[in-house]
Image 1: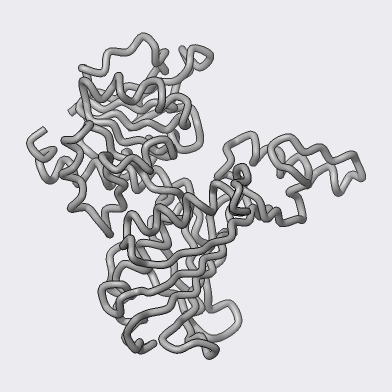
Image 2: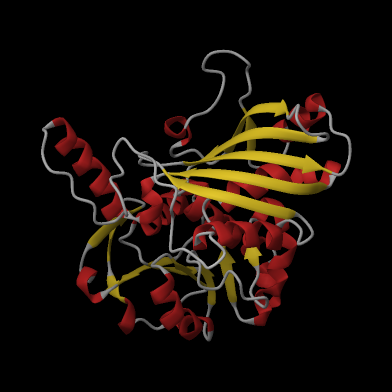
Length: 336
């Protein structure tokens, strides 16, 4: 089987390459694509150097799956072109709202993958939404979720490599008493927290918050009430979510821990003592969605609080895309 990766030189593209290698997926030919500026660069895969090709020169009829990891602009221009000849798995936000395009987190709604036949495009969910729905799907099945209040604490890698570089540069300048410049963020990110991701909407939410609300409902259940606040924090990798979850049925903490401990993609680390929880740095490069601080909300009936952590470049992007591909392969591409 032949596979292409669009945006192969970026953060997510490189993670897809890394995960394909770790999972030892049977690939006959791997084509690495990027903009003309990156043409000719070499990236190692399975001990062999692969030369990056200009996206505009590539014929997508040569591959069975094309991973898109290059942002909404590239997806808008090229995904439909590619989908005329192959199946596209897109990591950008561009197709997530399209009712004819499945928005997939394999542990949660893989049955929707059969809808790939509509347009030959599958959308990968938002990097902070994925861990939320992975953690909450088994609880929704058990107790029927009524409402979710999510506060996300998102690392700078969610804004790209230049944002990571800015955090490191600001940190260095801070200790050297040099002027701190902000290009990727509206305010200084080093030693700070910015309650603003993406642009503001008329309702006071940001686009990131609206995406979070809409995608959780689309993936889990449109009847669930969702509200969120999205915050950028000075961490390089991994997103965290503080979730307050109200159920329509009476819940039991022991049952919740047992169910989450045995649910696909979940790992419970919930010791009620110093250090008995997961932080962003411990989730880096891990495949699991980690769940800690499980407790009842004593101010509201049938409600719990959770702390959820996941590597946004791995499960929040690249791993989820590769798992989608694995599901397609397992189901013989749904006759496509």
